[in-house]
Amino acid sequence: MAKHGGYNGQMPGSMQNLMKQAQRMQQKMADMQKDLENQTVEATSGGGAVHVVVNGRKELVSVEIQKEAVDPDDVEMLQDLIVAAVNEAMRNADAMVNQSMSQITGGLNLPGGLF
Image 1 (spheres, helix red, strand yellow):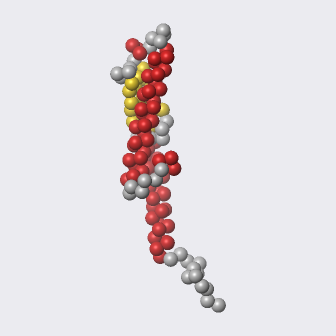
Image 2 (spheres, helix red, strand yellow; image 1 turned 60 degrees about the vertical axis):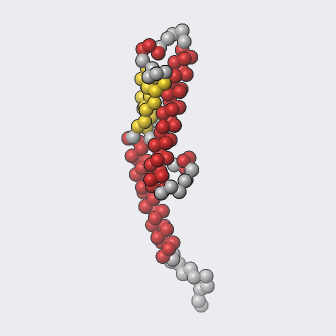
Image 3 (spheres, one colour; image 1 turned 30 degrees about the vertical axis):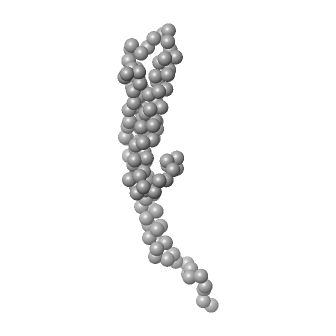
């Protein structure tokens, strides 16, 4: 008995090509994520009083605080400077990841939160 619908257990050539492309893209993305672990971005606040480094996985790698930024009578200011520097570094990390993603996806505009 002949099968109708054209599917005989094998994918059409165009579907196979699409699957191969998806697998290549998936491998490139895995490689990119591994590379991003070693790439860092930096940010400062308070005119350089606080300096932070974040990697491409959005992990805080280091924090440097200048002595003059440490005022026991104004701890809140130091806390604000740290938060500002970390937030800026995280935005820089997002930009780095998005740039890497666009190189892989060819500008498909996939949501950044997917990876």
